[in-house]
Image 1 (tube, rainbow, N blue to C red):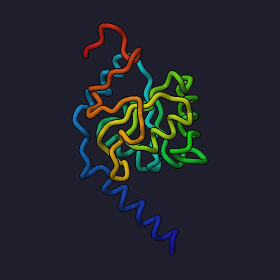
Image 2: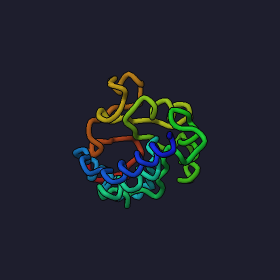
Image 3: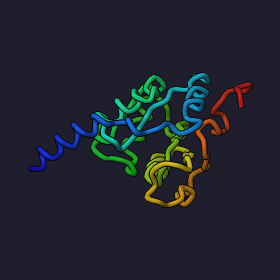
Image 4: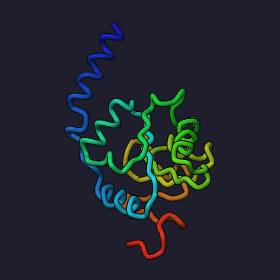
Length: 158
């Protein structure tokens, strides 16, 4: 029964994946700014990769990421640090020099355990709790508001 139910769920989820979703204000502009600064970006989500990749494509965001890792890509999911450590390895960057930008306490816990700095957006999924409770390095309310020392080269647009 479970296998049939899971297969039906996946089929229906993929059929409507992203249809009723909107990209938060400032996300596209923020990703464009990060890409223009020459930064390599990865998407690390607990959502299964088979759902994450089509969603990014449907919203026109897939071209910003050199890697997309779903929750099924590694043996453990966030908040375990393993997925973030593996993402750092794929990017070729040490954790201390890799900024985790997330939207939940799971992201903050994974970043802290992996040794990454972490900035959280104030929207998104966080079990109904304010993300500031996760003690990130900063909280922003739009991705295009991201300011981080050394993240963008001098002269980059604000």
